[in-house]
Image (tube, rainbow, N blue to C red; front, top):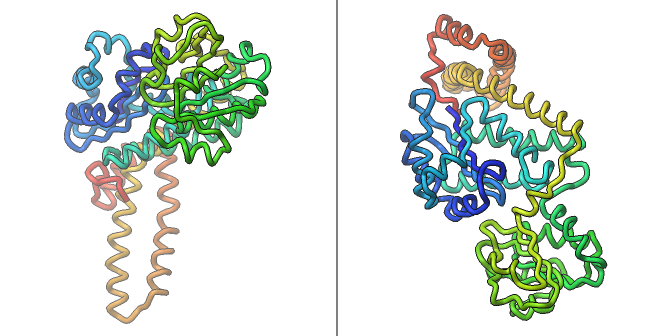
Length: 404
């Protein structure tokens, strides 16, 4: 049973998202403690969403959300009542529809943004590293990434190369009359910092300097031909534009002087710029709240096409999920029989060529039944398939693992 808990820019404040994003591993473990053993979890934490995707096994349907909500609230230091008002719950087939839309940029602050597909992929990789994923979550997230590629290639949604970074710079363009003469400081050395440098150069910025709180700025600057700053206060004092794309607070108010015009773009999650900075004379801050307010609506036709593709992909995923136990059980039956026959053939002197022929034959033999099972599952006849397998072969697909 798939379950998704979603707090995002539509239903939650950025302050709440910040708190939830501070300890993703801790939040993951808290959620897993609230569900039966053997469940899996993948957490997607970005600058405008915090979502937990759970594969819950051996639990009555529907899985109660309240224990999960309380576990997440405790892990993030958020009052339970605030969490209840800032969390959407998706179950079953709706989880795939939601994640596929998210990975395709349909649920982003800037519709069609490019970064989210990579963030979805990295969330799965992080879950693998923590050992919290499952076969069902693997299939879900891999299909989400492939769906995002299909949306990008087959619709005009991503044709303009839109991204959160680029849109933030679009907003900044009204304050920067000549990019070639602007003194720009990028704070950070991660993916958003790299995207910021690339987008700044597209606009003609020539004087781009970097400061890295993590100490990784030397390599970042060297690979991009940038000047490395080691004194943040001095670098801010000389800048016309500061773009922060780091983790945690990196720009306190005491580092920013009053009177001199300065534009600050805060792309960090948690926020990188102290709120008091926006109250300093001559300083303007464009943060994620501002970007959300000004984000434009996407072209209606491309959006509708993308939604249709997401719906089709989710329907296919549901069919595959319904058919998977039966196909897996049939493959296991054939594989066990094949292994026995290969062992018997080897005992009679058969070599590798005979084994290769037998394995190829087994693959050919399985192809048509597998296709037919998917077709029947797609027409709502999964129970007939399961009954037929039990009647003909004495196997019970529901009791067989789908890890093959």
